[in-house]
Length: 79
Image (cartoon, rainbow, N blue to C red; front, side, top):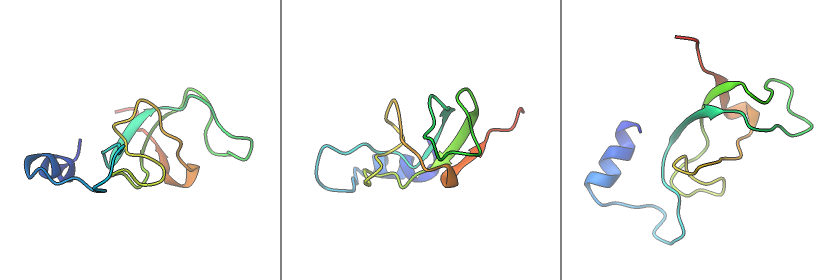
C-alpha cells in the first residue's frame, strides 16, 4: 500500500467511479506464469510492479492475481 492508496481511502475518493473496480497502485508478488514472449522473468521470480492501478484496464493491485507486461516488472532485491 503506497501513500496515494492511503489518501484515496481516507478521503473516500474512488476512481473510476464505476464498479467493479480493483484499487491499488503498486504490487509485489511472485511470477505464477509467463507468456511465450516473456524473456526477462520466469515462474517463481519475486517481482514488484506498477500496472496502472485504480481499476484501469489491467486491474488494480489489490487483486489476488494481476496480468502485467514485463516492461512494468522489476525483480525484487534479496534484501
